[in-house]
Length: 455
Image 1 (cartoon, one colour):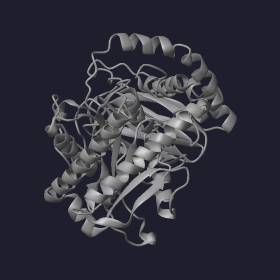
Image 2 (cartoon, rainbow, N blue to C red):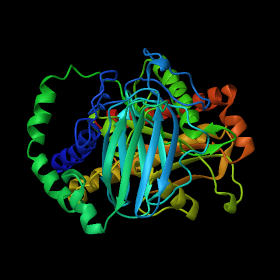
Image 3 (cartoon, helix red, strand yellow):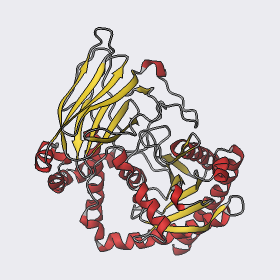
């Protein structure tokens, strides 16, 4: 039963990969630009180029940024009946446009583009569009996601060649429809009422695929595997303050933590992302589960809304069905919306997760997660400013692997000037990375000793 649940989770993520392939619905031919690469089906993100002007770690790319098409203006026109989106480019591109339900969105997948748009572009809506966002969603592929005011269909979508002094343009025309018409126009994998049937049909192929994969596997490395998960990325910037983006701060920290852990030679380390790429929440969990990780550490940096005052210090979260306080509940709710930001629409966890075997595994995993959280707090408080309530619990989706001890670390509040100064400090990062590495050593020393005694 547990294996069946695992297969359904993996195949649910497979639906996402299929949705990202630029080969359906609307493809405009263009000899100057190859199609965007499809995302990897499993494992960590492949290093790729980083776009945008925000500060953060320097990620080298084998392809010069000048080779990518440039988007230099974007605008909306029309009303609540018909709304047009226009993207000005320096060269024609291929694209695919499709709609998603609950919430209503339209997604446009394009090859990797350098977005050189004016600050604030997309924050103000018009007509059928509340707002739109854009950015890198995988190496070689960018995405534009439109939040709609209600159900709407893609009436027309096309690319215009440069003519009469006007640049090449991507044009998307949206038309108002009712809920019934909207759902009927969705691709089968995106229709809410069809998702369970598709998951059941695909699950039958799961055992054969898993067996083939197992045959080709190399002899395992006996060292514990740790997955480091820098939050957000690509189209999802996370929290922002004073020109700093959470996605860049946590990526720099995650890479530094990886380097420190690998230096000891005692552990294997896998990153869910090593560049400015969007990784769906379920895929982050999948990385840990498919590689039989011994520990999953998700790295974030929070920000309080202005009306909620000020807060400072690091906080360590473990999974709970009920948040430990109102702030934890708010944060979990915000973080769990990351997939909607990226235009992702995945199937829900299968009902078999409630099976007794999974339940027992979750109980044991929760015990180990709480143990690591306490060890981590003990090490961090000697070198890092901690929140007044440093240990909390909430329903974060990235912590829901039933068989991998997991914690989510909020390094501090980017909304607090003092914390932000620390978050951008290399000296602070080195001290914090060192304390986390000590906690990891203590966790595995105790766990391996316990396993040895059991034998």
